[in-house]
View (tube, rainbow, N blue to C red):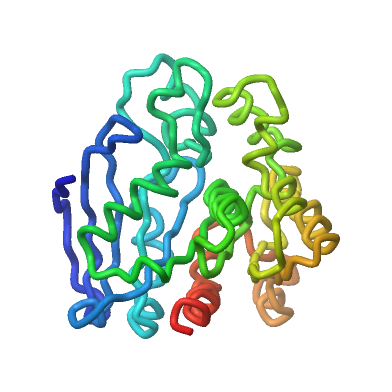
Length: 296
């Protein structure tokens, strides 16, 4: 499968590149960002996959997250794919910000007209890693995954549906229980049909209940003043309860502003939100979390 390089930029002695390729799974052209740390010039490196959220492309993470220095120090290749197929000429694909283009939800659609192209689960699980391993100096046995919002949902379900495939998983403000929130009901109903049991196969809170063992340490950061948390779109408490019942280790950190910053904000209590400013604040912790397992 041929790759076309779209861009290349030197960064912390490595290279941040973007490539385009024809996807057999999605039947369209797809782009992905890949950071190659300095260690990739002399040997194989582990790979960390990032899954972005609603409306994002491969650009959001590579330009806003500020992960490059930590990835370079730990010798991690970081791959950031797009969030959906694009330009498939499907009626209605561009009508909504939370369904269709930019909103693949990391599922394999079973409903017309989406089932031909909207197969992001299989693309992330199979096609993209094969492509990365065939073209870059990776160690296929050392792979981890993380993401944000819809991408946090994607990271969790991929790890939970494929025990042992990923060394570690983490998420920023993930959609933890999509069968119970409006984003999830819209996307899963549209892509998978009206049978809710099919939705549960892509729901982290449901999947963790049948996860076969406890060998998966999960890190989740959630902003205290995330507008989508208060709107009931993320539902992390449901996931934490399910993990606790199954004795699956999960570190959940509700991040908020310190008193010092509250004072600077004239007494207003503003915590971290859903944005990339929140992600950039804690991205180094997540890189370290994954490096602990990938470099073990």
